[in-house]
Length: 209
Image (cartoon, rainbow, N blue to C red; front, side, top):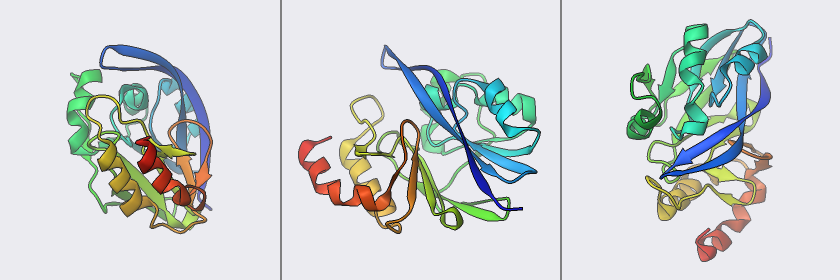
């Protein structure tokens, strides 16, 4: 069976540094008819489980530990038995949302996750958060970027645990080196491509975006 990407949007709140914002999050499901992984279990574990359609969930992968990307992860893990994977540099952020439930395993740079006959490579891309990661799936010509890279620019870096120079380095060195026709599937909003974003790098730096 051929691996495919399923997508749903869930809604909730993002909370950090004493503020709260209403957000819509992209939840990505990568797999085939029998097994899958979930990238960012946001807001609604019931909806995500329904989208799995009875497939075996092999892992819940967190691109970073802002609450809007992980709030449904423990409930989804309990419902499916799947482990939660997070880069260790985001444990402090994770504990702000889930102080009594630790992730099950760590993500590491260069780690390969295999699902439905394809490989997703973990790329550590700090900046939006210290433990932010992207997942590159060359067989699907796709990179899942969480909140590191969006259509039109980098993820936000104006809050705690973030750094604009760091996210620029991550994007330049880890993402813009991917093939230009690679689809960028983001944590919020519409997809883009590496080729569409690469020419804008200098403008982002000038704007301090």
